[in-house]
Length: 409
Image 1 (tube, rainbow, N blue to C red):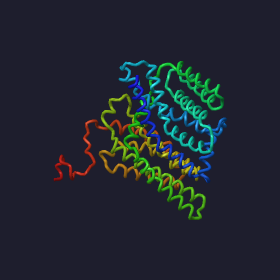
Image 2: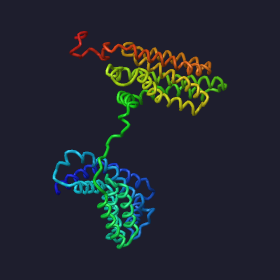
Image 3: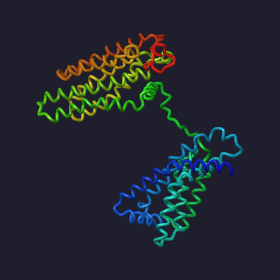
Image 4: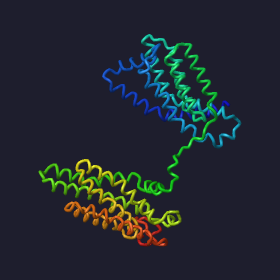
């Protein structure tokens, strides 16, 4: 039993050390930004260690006492249903060890309370009763965060115990202790904590996850570059006195170019980092589903420039929104061509620029593009179907320095 408690104690210390620096940095920043930092510290200490503290004054501290264990519980309980269950201890011992770890995880808050207790002592305040009160609050927060079978009941009893400890006299402190003991007795065994969410197992989002992992932070750089046409358009409209028709046409041109540049950059990166691979043919997805998944993924990213344009020019934003499904499907088509046609992104950008020019001159072109979306979908699906599974695609890298390359020494 002692070895188990030491194990949980060390785990709680590691979690506490992880949260120590950010918590103290935030607390120190809030104090230093105050007009009178010393007065703020004295006021907090006097409110926390008062004989009858006001609930509004100590509510942030109580919230931290419950939030720290709730944050640490998933990290500390993960793995408690593995090999550790083969050791010679009961489920109750395991639960109590986890409770000790959760109490230890509140070490940053405990150290802060100790510092405030020193300040309160210098002000002549009594520390015996308030110290016991805050110890019971920390224990209540730990018991409430335990992932047990009757967590709702345990959490409610822990909140009641914390309120009794904060607002009561010595008799109510004793009642708070009894409520905590009752909560620990009725809590039940630990439940298995699911570390990962269930949405990752759905077939409809697996393609999104693969694309996200392939791109990563690169979407930020591509989006920044794509917003440059919108910025140039905004400067052009702001620095010139334009008629309403010319201003609307310029807004449509900038919005379409931003969407085209964004989709071209993303399509090029997806084609190189997540090219269409033969294994996808063995999954229970049709060619239409694979193309639709790529088009939706690209469209979600393209909503940002469309939204920015819609805020300034709603009518122009609607026109560009009508063009976006066609461009997304054409980009999904070029994803299938880029591995063999390395300038495929340039070809798509040329198509997008031509459509942007037409839309800037003729607003009703957006409705024609929306009507042509089914044709673009058929073309993208046929492009996916026509891919050769056994087609060899060379890797895009410099041959110099590659010992397996025969083209360069």
